[in-house]
Length: 85
Image (tube, rainbow, N blue to C red; front, top):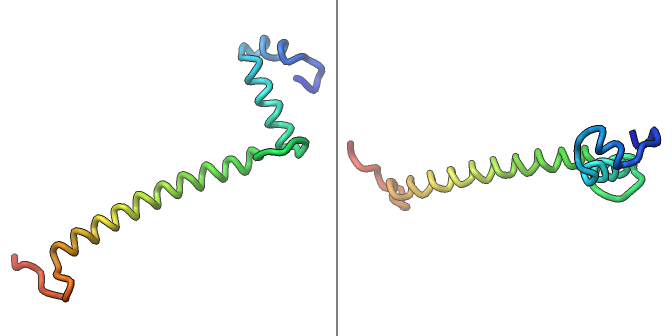
């Protein structure tokens, strides 16, 4: 719409959203087109996915560490036997 000649205010009014949102979208479009420096939308998607995966791996690691602690309490460090059942 901006490329078609409408002003930011006209686009914002037509879409019933804030001017700032239009400015943000326009800036991101320029970044994605390589006209401005910044993180492209595709890189941002990859970063979000990577952060999500890191969180999952950290949670799995915490569980593994806790399991290791519990096993250490049950089995002696010198390879002793488990308590009888």
